Image 1: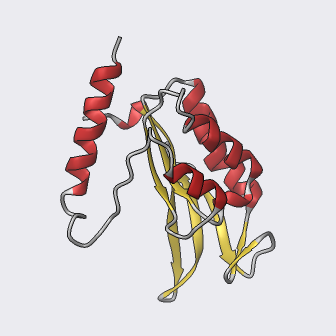
Image 2: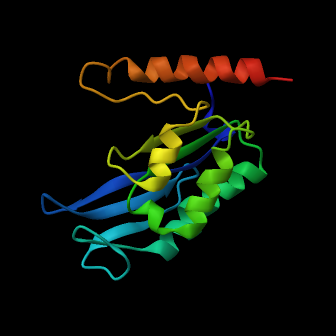
Length: 157
């Protein structure tokens, strides 16, 4: 099993108040947290949410950059979605970490909708895309663990 100390990156989490969703936070694997988007916030808009690019870049993007610098064994990117893609810094970094010549294993999520960057990612031969469904969700953690354990064993010096 891969320990969290060998992983770097971020995930996004829904923020709720009074029973309704008011936005999303970006959370680093080291536990730092900040707003990704909120209803009525300033910034680029995705639906009714304003995206806080400064917060996202100073938390999520920096967490990925630090993970690369520390040579983490697994990068976590949740997610490559509309909100995150407003960050040019993030787009450039995703291109580097998912480059076919890069050897970082990445556990990531990508939006289903079409987007030029996401469409190009889907065409890459070095990516394995697994669609999350009601039928496979219970077995997915084990399947992903086996995929990454196998990759890490084959990449070990």
